[in-house]
Image 1 (cartoon, rainbow, N blue to C red):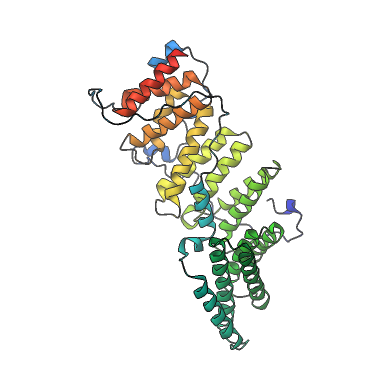
Image 2 (cartoon, rainbow, N blue to C red; image 1 turned 120 degrees about the vertical axis):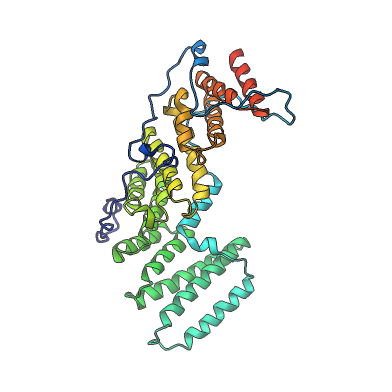
Length: 403
């Protein structure tokens, strides 16, 4: 494990519980293809070769029939045709919606945030302070009062952040940390200690104090080894090192190890299992392991299909599908793309999601200047699209033939 490599002088944390998640979770299309639930991912092939363009028309098919032919006098605007470019192939960076989902998954309190006037929040904090001063040190509810006062300071900090009041935000976060530390020192055996340590780490991180953030997460991992918050702590560690790897690529290995630690907890009881898989895919891509990256994105989609009510899956699913498409553009064969993407699509009974993914794949090929591969994809799309989309596909094909 990576903890000793960080040089923080902490004792080795207890390993995760001796439970191992299934080798693969049921895929999105398990009902359509039951064998896919237990077999390894097969549709990944060698990178496409420079096939002769005259051979392209006969290649590529989809596991569903094309709609009936219709007249071509369609009303409505035609979608814009993408431009042939020369970008480097890569999964898109984490979209803003996914970044928000990551933040909410690591701190579920953000999903419960209410718009409350700062004056009201300040009044609540003062009342709690008075109540705490009037409460005996031996009172059984005193630990809860200290924790509630810390949470009140966090709410005030969030309100100040929304109001773009930086100095007030920092002051309230420091005050929250002071109360969390007070709780930790005074009540080290309390059942809420893991929450206090985790929330303190989040506040340190929001203040930009990564040294204190790491120390708090390590206190949680080593001090409360059976806490349900450990998967979140591992993913939070992974996020720290993933960001640091932008300037120091050696940190990618640490990020990988922490994401994998989070995956040691079964998905049914692990609200960040899908998130850890998704971020592990980005780590593999940055480490120049595109096949492992695609496998991680596929497993993320399998998780989304198996646990549709898990937190943030409505955002995680489209983000993982987008990343899978752009990774496939690097290592997959275009003539086998439709069956592969159809097995990943969120609605396997309908070709609409598959065609959207194929369109993204065709655009990825175009952006990276891969004309032969793009031509295969747009010929498939032209057979299955109708209306303005079909006109767009034909426009792209005519441009590809003209170049």
